[in-house]
Image 1 (cartoon, rainbow, N blue to C red):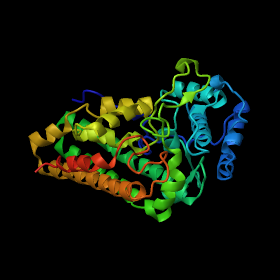
Image 2 (image 1 turned 30 degrees about the vertical axis):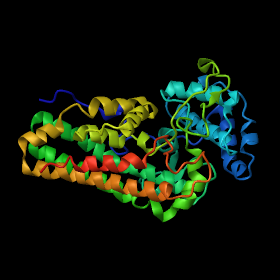
Image 3 (image 1 turned 120 degrees about the horizontal axis):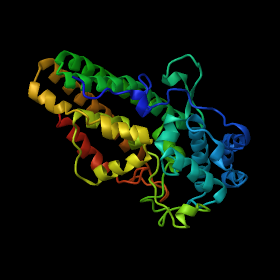
Image 4 (image 1 turned 45 degrees about the vertical axis):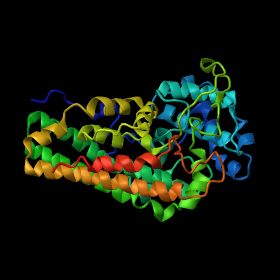
Length: 388
């Protein structure tokens, strides 16, 4: 008997799109907030000419209270995040104070969304895309980025690859919940079929990720894209954090938030929890757990509540039904392959580049952790979960 019936929509998870919004993101805000759209649209040219900070100073101090929850609020978070990071990074080193005309509405919008006021994966990727063909699929060639910094092929491709990975993960998330249901029913054949779908979804994710070098060069990514993604935590360019001018709740105290990183995607944490992949006990594990504060609250709940709702790995180990063992191991192998490719990209796109500024470290990820030291260890840990 199934103990808990799961409605994916209760967690803002779509059966086909996964953690991407069920409706395509808005491309414009209503009424007086349209000025944010207008100023953000001119941001790339202003940044290229070194006028980004002056450009952003023209933003009127708007109160976001009239924005509706959902797409409007997410659009506002996207625009304010880009305007803020553009303002801060229009010099090297970045400025240490964010003016009130951005900081105050940004804090208000972020608080309503349950996330910190910083550019995070949810804004940079999940709500930053559209489709050339509104009736077409969410494949790379049909995706367009809504907001950027400098702009250009490499910058847009980097984001769109992640959006396409999220779309490819959707069927796997649905199948994993079906696999959990099969465990509760002790239905081995249904479990094997569901795990086969999860493995296929992971393989599709890898296929999308493998296309990153097609239109995103490591040198350009590192020197023109990455600088805008850093946060204030563990960042030598922000030794004391960032001051959010005018935000009463912070009382002038500098804040330390982690920057945008793919580790803020809910896909891998959810699948790890569901497959019973235990974490390595090291600083990267603690850092990864801290990043859940940047994941949308309902996605966070999906990881924490649905991921471990059944002990799938124990069931597989206990029953040792050959088709289930095979498909479970296929999931582990596909997860390992995906993360191995990510590790190779971390080396080529970041670690091997030439650091020119403290604000763009080759040793520290955009989230603020010394990633290379631990990624290989965590990769080996995944492989160790295959069942003989």
